[in-house]
Amino acid sequence: MADQNLTQDAAEVQAVFDEKELSNVGEATLADAADLDSAAPLNGMIAYSAGTSNIPNVGAGIVITTQRTTSSDDVQEGQLAFDIDGYLYHRELNATVWTAWRQLGALAQASTWSALQTFSAGLTVSAGTLTAQALAATNATLSDTLILTNGGSTGGAGSIHQAANVLTLQAGTSGLNIDDDTGGATHLDIDASGNLTVSVGNFVVGTSGKGLDFSITSDTGGMTSELLDDYEEGTWTVLPADATSGGNTATPAAEAGFYTKIGRSVLLNLSVTDIDTTGMTGGNDFFLQGLPFANIGTIVTVGSVSAASITFGGSIHLRLVNSASAVGIGESVSGATIDLVTVSQIADDQGDVVGQIGYIV
Image 1 (cartoon, rainbow, N blue to C red):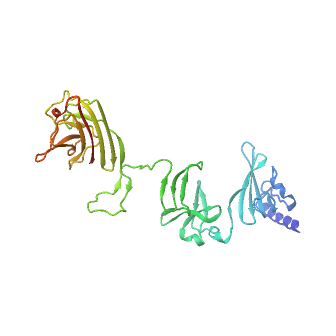
Image 2: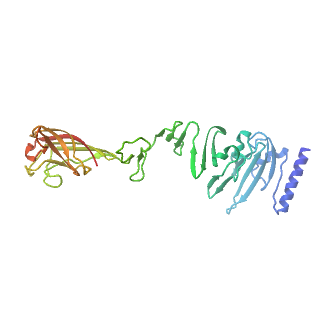
């Protein structure tokens, strides 16, 4: 009786194909279901299989075979399978061997996944773009949603959805990882607590003037900016001279300069040894030129200094005047105004200066 019903069903399908002027429709009974693995099944064959290995899932299903001939007379064949649980599979013929079945999706699933069964407009593919439109049932509040499952289970699932023109990537319960295309080391991780970890590469600010914005924090009354938009570190050449710019310069036996800039704050370290003052004007103030950034134009900045073979009264300090790109050595004497050390106060080929100063640009 079962074979008779199958033959009758196939005849009805053949009649429909004949009405549409189609041909090459075949049918397979329970006895010849193994023909689905034939190297050359009929084009357009619709076959019924009762729980054989031809369909991946346990249970009966329907298999549709398609065939085409390329410009080089090669025959390309493929099969779609629908099992009794509503799953859709696909495979193609590679030479004389069928590839493994690939699950494409589900037409119907358990009640816990009822939201995946009905779409208001459905999934669409256009020019290589997959679009998930508003889901019905339990996911309706997410509007346009694409759900990423965890091995077919709702536990730990994530989603991509949009509502009110905002696209949201909702991670699973353990967080979000971004890996390279080999599935190797994690490049970026956002854990369940919202902490961001960059494990490979750097955080790169791609636009000048942009950076880390701390405007969420409380402020004092004089706050002018909460944007950290710069970091830089490097070296600079310390050049002894008898003017803040230009003038006569000296040659030390050795020099070294380092700087770190964070936002508008600059920290300098400098060292010069055995300064040769030949050719410099003895009565001129002594300066160290070459600062990587000029001082802000509204304040004088001072820093610490240690000196050898330099004559001075009271105490000394590094002194950076308004808008200057050179630092002098200030003398502080009780009851007197601050003066700068002159070239004549430095012992030729013997004077050493080591210091540090921080300032604002």
